[in-house]
Every structure is written in structure tokens, then in C-alpha cells.
Length: 577
Picture 1 (cartoon, rainbow, N blue to C red):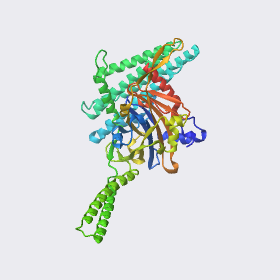
Picture 2: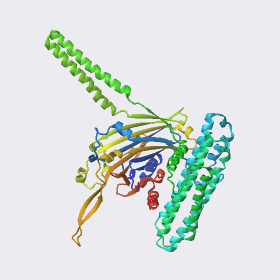
Picture 3: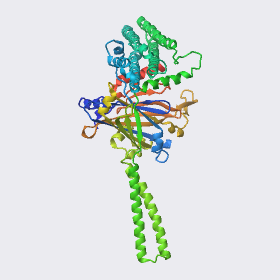
Picture 4: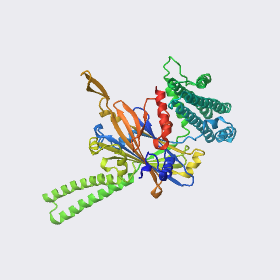
């Protein structure tokens, strides 16, 4: 594969092919918590294609010192440590469109017509309307976070060296912040115009309860994004030589919008209220509950199927046939030469039975092993939300490999930063390969999406078992102070690197396009410390796990939008401080 297919600046002749792959498969890998990595993939539905094919290969290079091998870690344990979710992608609608009457009408008009039409007379019609309400909540959440992210990027950029230029920059940011607040007010007002008709059906009704969940969740997001921008704004003013009055006024508007959102939930009697001085133990649970309620509109019906039972049965039958043929042949030949009541004949029959029994087991074991290479471990059928139509299927396979069994393209990407062969020998590794093949059926998907543009595939890898063999996260080393001659004790962080190579392929045969990404996970005995995205030249963007429930959409790969990620990384650093 040419250099243009990696995360370096793209050559003009290869840009179109790479952009096509990035359009079809948009990966993000980030910490979900101290133990889990979350991989997000995006599959777009292209009109005109009957079937669409994607292949995702994940190679994990794990240090041998962590005790992972074929005997201690098999496919059953890997799948027990891996969780996968498949859902529809949130439609990309801007906050300004939601705030402007006459724009984004399809998401409101469908809902209003359903609430006033005949769909309310059937159970399935009520379910469809409730789903539209939840999808609208997902759209609002995505739009709010996107606009807030743009503001945070502007606020976390480096201050201008010239105070006059910094003042103009702050004035521009303040103007955009005021527009952000204005759009929030108009968009939430437009959403709440549905309140009366949704609540008219009374509590306990699916439509009424779905609306209350969406209404509460959207105000939670409004408060969250307002506070995030306020934190970024405070950080900016603290390190700037000048502070523009408009920026201070914009902060006051953000404070008011956040306070109003909290007060709105209190007036409505919603449970998501944070009270200072209280334990608030119900709030984290309830936040996740209403998030699951809202996002349930996007999740699909996934069904696992057992794979290879017939093939393994045929292998076993063939092994039994060969073993029995051997035993019968030996028996017939022995009867021709020996008396059936002689001790020699009996001994031959006993030995032939032993060999026959072993032949059957060997045939099943080795025949099954070889045929298993051509069969997936599991097949997942993806059905629509009603469970009536098949939208696609996924085939998964797990392998434990030695480094010399990895193909050259992946191995070259893994070793791109290693200095020499001595360094490679000093870091022996074992490789876990996880293959996922996805086939989407375009026509059923277009019917199901109805305005949505594709699917999200979320895979969580649990690396917690790697911590069992890790040393303490700190080790002390001694250093002599050259000026005083004293011996100083210097603490050093003891970390381990898990290198991950992602190879993503869209299409099949000659039309297939692929790219390779490299990620390094830095861990210690306490869990995941950070994730580093590397390119062939050693450039990296770092996402640090800080224990917060951050939105996965805030991070992407450097090859996709390098400037966006660099700004977002600074934003997270500002929020942490």
C-alpha cells in the first residue's frame, strides 16, 4: 500500500481513494473507562448498491510478559471480554436549523402529522411515533454538542501575541457564543411546542413517557454543554493578557441558560436534579437510564447464530469412518492369517481398537482445527426494530498469532517507530487478531433509515485481564546530584504498551479500498492511562482517560480531521484543569 493510504499528509493522486474509505468507514478508538477501549465504526448506506461490504481487522500486539497465549486466552474468553452494539447513526442536523422555523421540517412534520393522524389507532403506529420523538432527542443532543465543541476549540486555541488581535478574537468568540445561546433558546422553544399534544395522552402512555424522557434529556444536554463552554471560557480569560467585555457578557448568558435548564427540570418534577450537599446517588443512574431510553430508537435487533455445527459434525463423521475402516481392515487381515481364538489375534484386535479410537479423536481435532480457519466464530443477523426484515449480517473471527504470522503490511505499520532489530527482540509480543466482516442490504436499510444515513458499530474491548500480571505502577530509581553528591530517589512510572493496528476495507475484489491506522494504548496496573494515535512519522494526538463520561463523537483520527482533533485535545485538557 502506498504512503498516501496512511495518516500522513495525503498525496494528490491518492486523496480521492482515501477520502472514499474515510467516508465509508469512520473509526474512533478511545478509552471508555479504566479497563475498556471503545471502537466506533460508521457504515454509510450508498444508494444504487444492492450489497455493501466492509472488513475491519484489529491486531493487538501484547507484551508476552502479561501472560497472554493460546492456552490462557481462547476465543470464548475473548468474546466474553468483548461487547458489541449496533445502532443507526444520528442524522446530521445543525443547531441553527433546529432553531429556524422552516428548516429541519421533516423531523417535526412527520411527528406532528403522526400525532394528529390515524397512526395513534394502532399499537405499531404508537411505537413509530414514540420512536420519532426519541430520534428527535438524539438529533438535539448531537447538534448541541457539535456547536459547543466548535466554541470550545476556539476558546482553547493559543492566545494571540498581540493584545489588540487577542481582543478582536475574543470579540468574535463572544459574538458566536451569543449566537449559540440564541440558537439554544429558539431550538428548545421549538421542541417544547410539541409538549401539549404529547402530554395530552396522559402518564403511562408510551408517547407521553417518551416525550418526557426526551424533554428531560435535552435540557440536561443544554446544561452540560453550557457548563463546558463556561469552563473553556474561564480558562481562556485566565491566560489571556486582556479580557474583552463582550466575552464576560457572553459568559453571563451561558450561566443563565444553564441555570434556566436546571430550574426547568425542577419545575417539571424531573428526577435529574443535582443538589449541593446531598449524596445525589440517584442522578448518575437516572442520567444513564434516560439516555438509554432516548437512544433505544437507534438500536437494532441483533441475533447471534451458531456457526459450523454441520461442518464439524461432517468432520467427525469422516474421522469415525476412516477409523472404522482401519479397524475392519486389520480385523479381516488378521482373520486370514490367525486363529480367532489365539492370543496373538486378540492382541492385534486390542491394539487396532486403540489405534481406531485415537484415529477418530485425531481426525476430529485436527480436521476441526483446519476447517475452523475457514469458518467464522459467530454470525450476527441484524434485523429492523420490529424484527421483521434482515438488514445485514456480521461475521466475527478470533485468532491468536505469532508475530511472524502477521502479514507484511500490518507488521510494517507496527514496527514503523522501532529503531532497530535489537529493540524488536527486546520486546517480544503475541498478537490477537479480531476480524469482523459486515454485509449490509441496501434496500431494507433505506426503508428502515428513512432519513438516517447509516449505522454505527460500537465494539468495547475489555483489557482488565492484562492488569493481573503487571508490576506496581511506580518504581524508584536513584540519581546522584552532581552539585552536592547526594543520592536522590526519583519515582518512575511503570507502564506497558499495547499496540493496535486497524486495517479497514470497504468493498470487495478489485474495487476494494483500504487504509491502516496505528494506535498505542498506554496502561499501568491501575488501568488505561491514555491512547496515542500515531502516524508513520511519529506524530501523535493523545486522549487521556479522566474517568468522565465523555461523548465519543469528540474524537477522530488524525488522518480524517487533524486540526479538529488537536483542538479537541486541548479542549479536554482545559476541562480537566
